[in-house]
Image: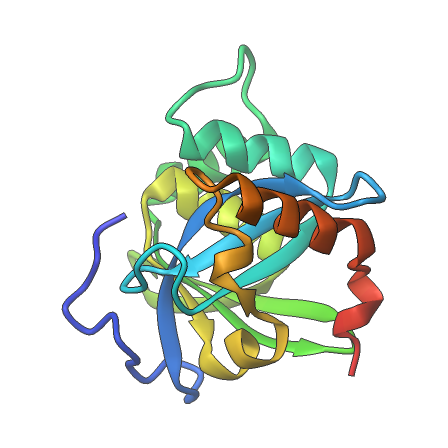
Length: 181
């Protein structure tokens, strides 16, 4: 994913303040539910906040395969969606995670089609799966980062065993309902 010059906080097509993010990875919580971790592209390791979005196992697997640049032996649903869009002459221009209501995240996919730009409502898991395949930029509403984000130092654990233990402790006790308003 390319970092755009306006990655700091441009206005979204939906009118809210946004921040560009990248898919940091996939994790499991204490109930073995899959979480996609989104981190602002301009934040250094251990800085800022990371947004965890709970997704299904199949969606997590599909996103992980795409972010690692691999291919499944047979096309997955997101691969089919990409093929259909490309066959119709459409490309994913960007993905926006626009809001969170009662613990549910909402997203939009902006498509560039032969007849112009189209914005469609979609689940974040499907939006992220397509963004990963099209190498499209991902944006999250600043309000979502503030409401649902967790401290990055709990997640950026690659070289720090103590932080890894803190993150495992966080995952042991976090529940998707914790993000309900």
